Image (cartoon, rainbow, N blue to C red; front, side, top):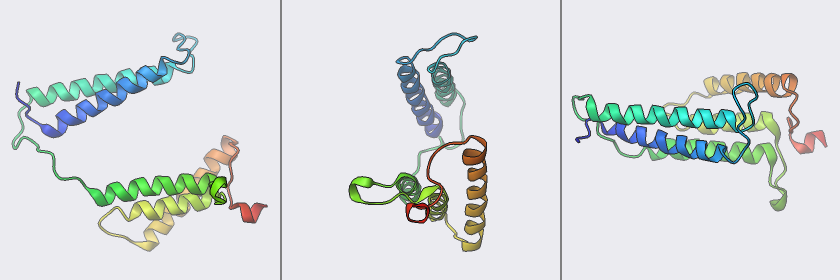
Amino acid sequence: MNIKSQKDFFSGLMFMAVGVAFAWGATTYTVGTGARMGPGYFPLVLGVLLAVLGGVLAFKSLVVETEDGEKIGTWAWKPLFFIIAANLVFGLMLGGLPNLKIPAMGLIAGIYALTFIASLAGEEFSFKAVFVLATVLSIMSYLAFIVLLKLQFPVWPAFITG
């Protein structure tokens, strides 16, 4: 069988692999039933749905004809680097690294760092727009996680709160 869309085919394979991995990992938890769901129920169902979606996408790539075969392009190294770096810096700022004497900077500073670093992945950068986005994300995250969900993690840097 001939692959008619490389992008769809490899996306489907990736979805199937991630879905199977999540479904398999969920089986180590109690699954339960639809009426009494256990902690493994949602990841199992989500993994199965993702694997099915990947199968449909891969099948479509073998059946539906595309104009140019939708070849896979080159790796986008700059966005890949900045998005991964933004997430690593956010995690580092949120919790710190006590072994290396790096203090926790908290949620607000972490969101600002995440937003500014991730925005470097794009083609254009506007300080004002990124600052507004970071501010809105910080306020909404504070309201959602601290006020509504009452999660316990640092909001402000450790040297400010003591």
